[in-house]
Image 1 (cartoon, helix red, strand yellow):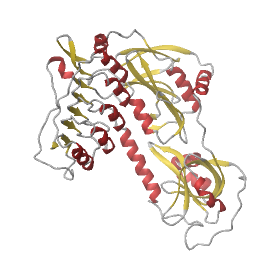
Image 2 (cartoon, helix red, strand yellow):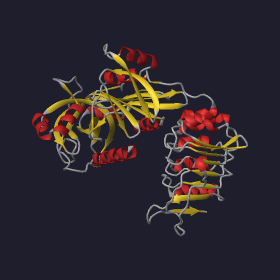
Image 3 (cartoon, one colour):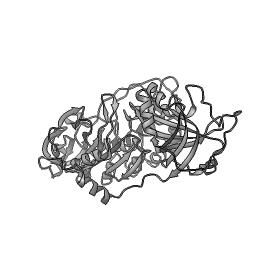
Length: 491
């Protein structure tokens, strides 16, 4: 879902930057038109309108917004997304305008050719606040201002410290009375302090605790949601980011996510803003109050501590040979990154399967497995970054990265696995070029890669059905999934 949203956002940005849509607006930058007289940089006269406010009004009712703004000289301020020169040689600045549904809205300000502040163009960098005067042209895929003159450019919002954030969190809520709420996430009994009268709803495997649209706290098992959400907002204005928490803002709202370790399991808590196919606005105060509640999350019952009991508690599958655990499978379990710490008690593990909830952060716990020869990370949240840890496991013979977040950038790390014999890259984002690069480094390696239609760009022998590299009887059905897919082998 995140990839889909990201793709849509990039498409919208592409349309904006390439100027698709209506005819380009006339302004003083258009070649062949006379330039208006230069005006010195001066403080704005009259009210200053926020870029996101204008954008919101145009998205809501463009006709009404035209009546209010079109052809009027206005002062507008916002946060810079990009500053560049278009194909017609006109300098422009893109400002944040919030979102429409799940797509970004932008405000494009075409700078007057005779504005002396163009000499300072190098200072118009992403994230800075800018105030301009210009004429509102209307809405054409974005809100457009023409003949703009820059009034001021200032530094972006400063990041806050963890101590300062903690004080804000503790002071949040304005005396709202909290009550204990008992609930379960994936059958794990939990408790949390929340306002009275909240509603609790299950959304797939997540739990949403809500009170109106200003308090929607989502609780998920594992760090996968935290990792995905943090990566998705990599370009947002981050007020604070740590390994376990971030708080960011965009034009209309704030977003936070926290990862919490409770016993052998991790949980992600975040504000949820996508309601009934639209994005809702939540303020900094709203997020701080939800973070205050999130900090109270706790287990309702004590967690297991003995190694085998931990595996049983998270519903992991394992097999023993002569009293030694040799196979462990978390694919259909409630295990998370922190659960993998228990593997230090089982140094004889030779085959290991992780699942959807696992991320790069958990792979550090595989270091004690000196006999590991088969590792499946299929469908997991492991990315190129996590392959640095995988490359340290020099005993590996078989590696399954199918449907993981792997690209060509991870191939140099895999090339370090000199003893690797079989590798599955089905449904990954690795290209034919990446595969050939890896084959050059490891000529003995058998690579399985999904055929991407007729233009697969990899050698295509006759299609074959295959199963995952290992299977097991009894409880082993939880260890390694059986999957049939159209694939090719590069040998």
